[in-house]
Length: 299
Image (cartoon, rainbow, N blue to C red; front, top):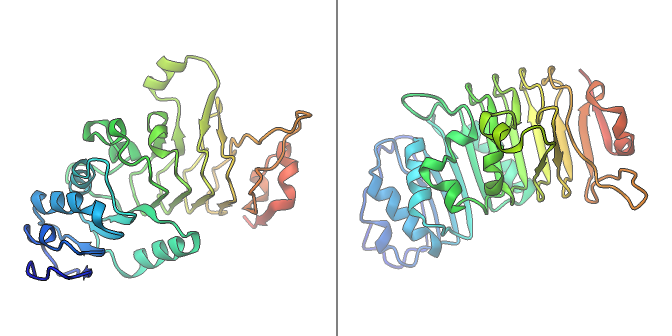
């Protein structure tokens, strides 16, 4: 395979693949698009080679069976990436249902930079309980801003996910456009703002959570979800186009969404807002200005 110097497109995607060998990708100097499932026993060297080659690719679709491999890729990329990338991290075979749902979402949204975490028991010692466990400071991801260009995040069937991310991760998510969390049975909060580190920094001050480019927020089948963020915080999303919250989030009581203000001080809808699909009992009376955009779901 390493002799195919003129190869432009390479797809190696099989649930039977155990590992992809080192020494091949650096020799495919004309490669334009790559879709690769590394396998459960792929060497660290192979993942590093893929990361260092990514900046010359137009499109890279990668499947990781271990969180360590994903973090190795991110660290080794040194802030560079292909023009388009879609990564999925999961210990189960990444085909059929999981990918069909994920990529139909991407086609609708025309997202070109995304990461999906599916059935995320992806470490031997512990599950992922927060996005902080993935985009950890110890891995250098946040400090280096290596994923600040990320546009889409999808979490599905992650059984121990409890808080999606903390305020410390906000700088790495400022270009996020699509956020989907579904079928994570233990998640209680999307943005954690009451952690000890945040309390020391902000004291009793009101907390503003800004995701300036977020367009779509989808929350479904989250039986323990109680809030998007805590009572002393508000969420500002000036680019918001769509909110979907299904009736299968029975404990969710508030969205904590702060609306833009007109010159007269009255709240107004985000300028790009198209639709809000939500339970009628969740809808706050203070948000009457948004009622024309609402499609109320049955509980």
